[in-house]
Image (cartoon, rainbow, N blue to C red; front, side, top):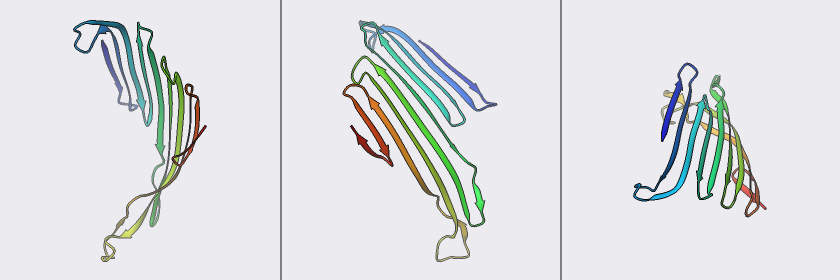
Length: 162
């Protein structure tokens, strides 16, 4: 088994990885099929890519990759209102030797977050402060899998599947 970590503080990036090659069961009391596992991740400034691969000498395998990112604008101050915009997306890919054999899904969301200058509490108008953030947004998604075949579209968390 090999483990590794690498950081790049000047750019806020990191990488991690783990590779295992074994024929042991949980306590290594008796031999099992030879198994190879790999896990890796790369991340920087809201971006992340993660992959997992698991293969066995008995013919079973599974591999997945996840790519996601998110970002928000800086806060814009308009006297008594503060606002910021945010965007995020996530893509998942999976391939394996058992059903559903393959799947792909993606989601995306965008939002505007708003905060008002307000008297807090309401009965003490001399105590002005920023109120709580309110978020207004939209989310979209799509997915497909092979066995059983299924395709879905999602708007605001409501799925329509065929």
